[in-house]
Length: 320
Image (cartoon, rainbow, N blue to C red; front, side, top):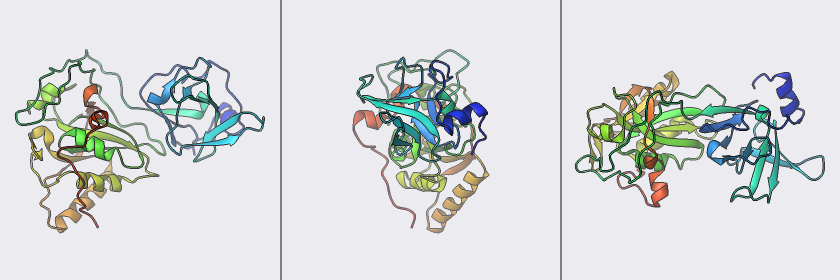
């Protein structure tokens, strides 16, 4: 548990309320996760935050199972607290019509900490040519221009949010299938391992930047372990195929695990040996974590938006 300041103790332990419009997260707009200041449990995603004008951070839904609701002693409100440690967050209100969910979690800023998805880029944005694609691969273009790429770094250490990066062919399919695993808090497609900063999709498709198409996963180790994620990664793509995945052939489609620490490295080495002992001729590389550059907006959650399934990724059981 994190050591609390006297003011935090009043809010989190003794259920006080901070002054309206005083909290640092009231007007906060950065993308990422809002976590419990006391225990680090992931509570809310930034995409569910909205401005209700009430003076406190407002969210229209929580991460599933993260927030407990109990009748308030005042007899008419409902208190919300962290489901893991019981720390007081604020109150929940229904039927106000602020968003389509018709729900407002009114939360004290002092009950929260924040894990950012991204850090601001230092140069101007790039546009991606709509027709950019490699010969023999599906067109991943879009009519809208791409958003600026942003270098993503490992989030600050906390009790819950951990990061993993996997490359296994077209990032659309890897993102779609890994993102369905329980305990995955957020997932993002992007580029890693190359020598060109702020790469665009058009540049990566030339095969000259050295980048891999990859996904960055933020997960809750209390719900899913790194080992379970890595096993799933090995089962949703072909780890024996060199320089490609299914019909997608090219340097950017190489298979790799990018470990963040020695624990992840050891786990990956153990799983690679298990597969080799089963007779698989593994092409997957094991590499240290490098800067992850998010892909353009139109690449994010592609299959979810299209309502279709991956064309070159499917789950094949490879572990007992």
